[in-house]
Length: 445
Image (cartoon, rainbow, N blue to C red; front, side, top):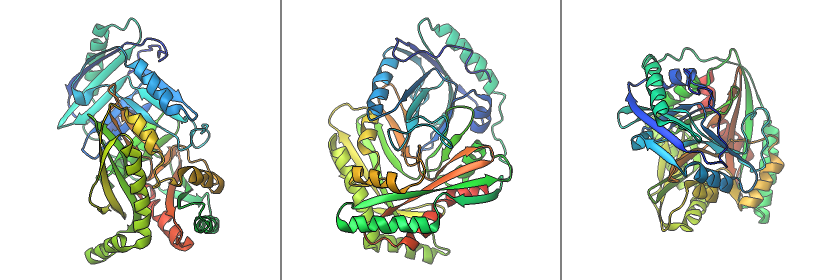
């Protein structure tokens, strides 16, 4: 599918009028759509059933350093300063992307092509929402002709109509070899050092992550992996980010970082975890152990307090009732958080205020960040970081990039982490972090 037509990607520091047109199309396989689009490619599925796939680029916003959120907000405001959009709300143009865990991240394997912050306004966007599928074509830059955009929409819609409604995934590639970046002994030593620091008063909590490299028996299609995750974890977010032709970042995170819609922000505290049980009775007993565990309640309370405090700067915060979120292989303590903002804000402002939550970073945040840099022998890249979208109004939604992996050819790098508090046991923490590799690893085997 020719999605780019060779247009120059405008600088977003120059006037760049946006022209966007949309039309309803028959439902098609998002994987078939992504296969035929030019890069960069993105896919997003939220908890309400909306799925968006996109390809090509009209504008690309890239930033790094401590001001990266402000840089992206400022440049997005300039980008959206002049728009001509004829599309239903669900199919409106959006910027898709994410940021790295640390602001000074530099792209390097396995994170080649992933800068410290990048958001793309796609040339072509396929949206499935409310029982309908919409194709959106966007162009930007001085001299953009609305009639030409409409003609491109008609042409691309004809190509999309030839795509299948479903595409089989085939068999998993199979894992030939896997190796941990951190050994069990090294991880245990890091946990012991961390608990000593917590007991000394330097830290209250820190999330220690580890990585696993898997060599596959054949090349894996990252969108096939995404489809398997959809079938196994339909109650989770799902994302696919491929900034260039190489590596793709894929995940099925259970955790919303923040959603902003019309002045209402929604977040959630998801922390503390145990496995699923082999029988209903065992499963309920494990869920009860979550609710009764002083350690896990303390861990979740740190996350809940940090999210509530972060959002309270923008309006009144309501903390919902605590419960247990059950996924296919794991269950977590979960508490929803809602804030009604007292002024207009951009979703990236809220993302900046919340990232990283104690569910992926620690408390205090700056001390925990130093501990993570010291103890983790790998680059987190975009792991445990905000991934999502925002629109011209500054509304949008971001998930936390956990239960995730970087996929390139026959090599997959998986990431998982665990919250360490004063009474954490090194062996138990190692066993729990291995459980968190399973959402990706099980779909590769």
